[in-house]
Image 1 (cartoon, rainbow, N blue to C red):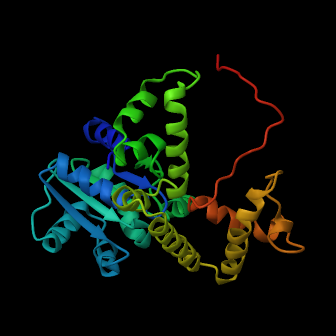
Image 2: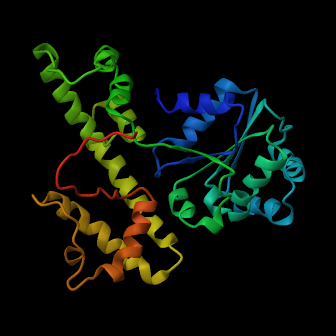
Length: 297
């Protein structure tokens, strides 16, 4: 699959002001695949460490803040040297290891020659807590589900994708393309742009198989609710999450707390809603009275 965010990683790699990078994105948008593919095509080697699958790795960051010592220990685990410039060092699910996240400050200040990337499905929640990450010592890239153009490329419609990319202004779509693009757009909506669902559709054309993938993904999101540090917030997260489809189906799509739970108030549920926004599972879209154009002087 082709992901346009790869170009941003290339820009980061060659930047003279490069800092350790944090790749933010919800679960299963393709972060791990992207970083491994980026490392495979641009570096001599990739050193990959997943703190969710191997929580014991975090001990190396608890005992020392020195990048040199951390690198030596990780090289033993890696089974190969971790070299500056030519090895891509990946810390996956880095939010599960706060000390590893904090170590990025020291990589920035003391060992900028190493190419270090951290990724995680709940990084947006962690970043919302300034004490938990190295402020101003990291670069950020946000990753989202596949765009419609990426969907077309993945499903073998490169010509349609090229047509869209060449369109530089709002203009009527030629009739020859309109019905075809409309059908492809409906299929894109069915997959939600999630890479695994797109892959299943491209390989099998089975909508039922796509639905099973998405159902499993939603269940994984719901399991993440239990990772909220406050146990009392878990039922609030669930209530908000379950209310969202019905709220979005209304003609007036304004979010209302009373639709979450009878008698609910903002002060009771605002923290839970903010957690969902930080996790990338909900988006806050501000209402406006009318569109206004302006420019900075």
